[in-house]
Length: 141
Image (cartoon, rainbow, N blue to C red; front, side, top):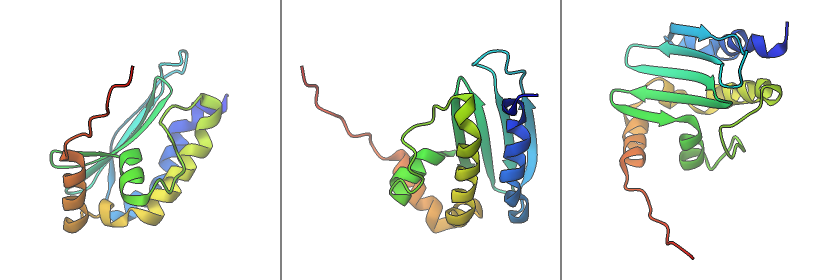
């Protein structure tokens, strides 16, 4: 069995710390990986929040949600933590994915507790960042 078929079980192991914070697995799905578009999806839910980790089309998306506010991990990493993860995007080939999942889980476990427990001040800040107008960049010919 190829290592890429173990991404869901690895994600469950690496993000297992969420259970200590009151999260439970809400849904999970793993594809066959017969195509680069296939992958996995797992959602954790607590009383007020959800955390979704998904990998499809070679893109790893980790998204936190509280109410109507969706906050992608990479967005939070860049805007709240000065890109502490060192990631510059969300696209990873199968052979590069395992360490990224592990590192992201470690970063989230270490630095995101206030976000994961639904801290009001943290989520007010996130809401302001998420809903802020996008900066327009000048068009250069």
